[in-house]
Amino acid sequence: MTEKNDNPVFARFVTEMRVRPDDIDLYSHVHSSRYLDYILAARFDQMERCYKMSMQEFAAMGLGWFQRALTINYKRPLEIAEKFTVETGIERFLKDGVIVSFKIFKENGKLSADGEGNYALIDMKTRRATAIPEEILKKYSI
Image (cartoon, rainbow, N blue to C red):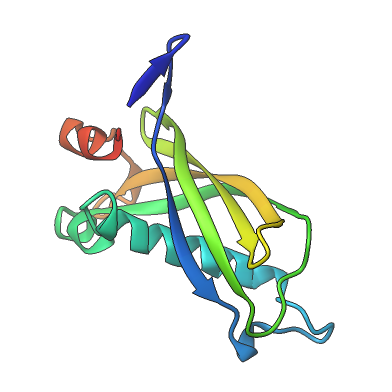
């Protein structure tokens, strides 16, 4: 974590993917709902590979993540069989969650979509948001 003007800057990570035939809608490009799948798949990959704490480890601790809000700005469509990357990173921590920003880049490097999500850490027994434990904050503050 690097500090600049009291605003921490966190690492960003990239996951490579490819558009599958079943991602395509009637207009011959990726259906808008699939972008949610891409963001989720990238975060699952990056949690395990980059932060070294997978979703399974959260579940074993009785914790889970709930999406409170998500904004997607669509710029350019992804098309069948196209390779693309999903870049994500934590923008800031909340008492009981995180704000994660993302960018999806087409194979040619042009921006396809961007946005951010607000995710709450949930105690799976109570189904309520809970404070992020210090050991998790440390792992995710890179």
